[in-house]
Image (cartoon, rainbow over the protein chains, first blue to last red):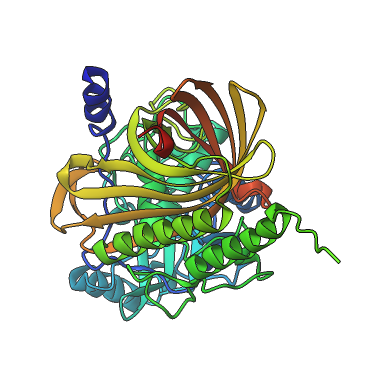
Length: 283
Length: 201
C-alpha cells in the first residue's frame, strides 16, 4: 500500500503545459503545410534556404507527427511564394498595435524590405535580421501565429534570428529541435516549465523526442476523435473523425464507441455459434 | 465527463453480463479486480534534459472485469481500467480510461495469453488561468486550458498472465496505430489481479 501511494505521488509531480494565447487557438485544418520562404537569406547563420528546408521533415516527422492521440498532420511543403519583407521586416502579433504602427511606418520610406511582414496561410519559416523582432542576440527564433479566422489559426510565421549567428553555430540536431519547438508555438502551444519537454524555453543537452507535456498539450489542442487502429486520418476509413470546421470533440460518446461495441456483439454472436452444444435430433 | 463514464461502465457491464448469460456452461464465471501501473508510449517520451527516454512510469491504475469461460481453454475477458488522475501543477487534470475486451487462452494451467482490443479515452481538462514563464531573456504570460477535451483511440492488445491460485500477475501491452508505422506506439500495464469466483461464494 505504501508503494502504491508513493507511486501515486511520483506520477503526479511533474509537468504543466501551456497555451500561447488565452482563447485556446488551434489550426482550423488538421493538415498543416510547413514552408520555407524561397527568398529568405540566412547570411549570418551561414545556412542556405535549401538547408533550412531540409530541417523541416525531421522537425515534423521525428516530433509532432509521431503522436497517435492527435489527428494533426504536418506536411513539409517545400518553398512558399517570396514575401518581400521577410528578411528585415517587423513581425507583429495581430493584437500588438504599437508593433504594427512601427512596422507600417518603417515601410513608408520607400524600402518595402523594412515594412511589416504580412499574414500568411499555414506555417512559413524564414531568417530575419531585424533585431527588434528578437530582443537579444541569444534568442534563436520567434514565432507568431499572425492570421486567424475567429479563434482558429490560419497561418503562422517562424523567424530565425539572423541578426546573430547563434542558430548557425548549433549542431544539426539542435537546429531541428529549435524548429520543432517553434512549430509547437505555431500550433498554439506555450512554454512548459519541465526541462524534459520540447516546449521548455531553452535548448537542452540532448533532445531526442517529445516530453509528456508536449504530447498532452498537442493532444488537447488537436484531439483525435476516434482512431481505428491508425487508419482514420488517411481517409481510408472515416468514422466521425473531427473535421476542420468542428470544435474538438467534447464529452459526448462518438460513433467509434458504437462501432466498437457493435463489433464486440458481432464477434460474440459468432463465438456463440462455435460454443453452441451439439444437439441431435432423434428420428 | 460523468455522463460518459456512466455510459462506458454501464454499457460494458450490460454487454458482459448479457454475453455471460448467453455463454454460460458447466464452467464458472469469475470477476476480476486489479491494481497496477501504466506506462504510456514505451521508450518514446523524453524524461530528462540529457536525452533519457521513459521506459517505466508508476502511474497507478485500477480496474475490474469478468472472465467468461468458452469452449476448451478459451475465455472472454471484458474489463474496464482507469489510470488514476494526474494533476500536473494542479492546473490540468488528466484521466485515461480503457474499455477492453480480450480473448484469453490457457496453454498450461498457470499461464494465459490474451489477445484483444481497447477503446482508450484520454481526457484532459483545465480550469484556465495563466502563469509567467521564462521566454527568451525575460518572461511572458502563458495560459492554461479552460476546457475539457478527449482523444479516442482503438488499440490492438497482447497480454501475458501468470496465474497463481486466485491471483495473477499480468503484462498487458497496447499497440496504438498498429497499421500506421510513423504513429505506432506501445504502452503497457503491469497488473496484480484477484479472481473472485462466483461459484466459491
